[in-house]
Image (cartoon, rainbow, N blue to C red; front, side, top):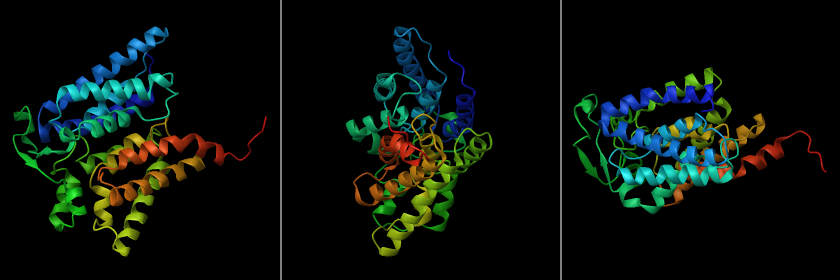
Length: 303
């Protein structure tokens, strides 16, 4: 196992979010994360062993994130499919850690999202914080819209609903609900120089500006604040947009990269059928990361 202190810090920052998810939705969330980690690690171990190399600790970041960005009630076999697909096709096919263009966890989620949409969006478990430890899975179910989709449909949002969204007392993917914990994790990752504050700030900046512009034009019924704290944008920005491998390396490119992610998220959220558009925005931006690095270099030497 190749030791990576930076990746350990990311996993450490995810643990409070995992604990909240267990207390909110039940113990199945923990098993979801463990299965995701097991499949990710096994997949990487098999292919790295073939190349006579060791797996890296980054695989536990992929496994933990993937387990947290799926619905709590997701069938185990879908977790297996997502973990294998993300690790193999988004990482090992490119040569392993450090060579992948796309974020593996996001690729895994995107694949099962478009392949098995009924399992990903048909119904949601309501949080029962802090009593989730009593249940295997929260017994309270709802079918229909999450707060973000409800807002897109033009349903009004009360002031108290914003507190619920910020606290995490809403249906959604296991790790994406507690915004306050994600913000604390972001502060920790930035202070320890684990995540780029340039990417985080520019992503939020791009999202806020475009959401406000669309709201002023009357194009989108989703408020600016709700665009920022609803859905998976906050989690995706902190833990996946800042992925040091699939994000740009140069400082100037990081600003552009973040603006691209934030803007694309709002554009796709407003005009496409996918309300949870942050994952597609990040994957699109991943493709442009090498080009942004090239264009942002002060000197380009022609050979």
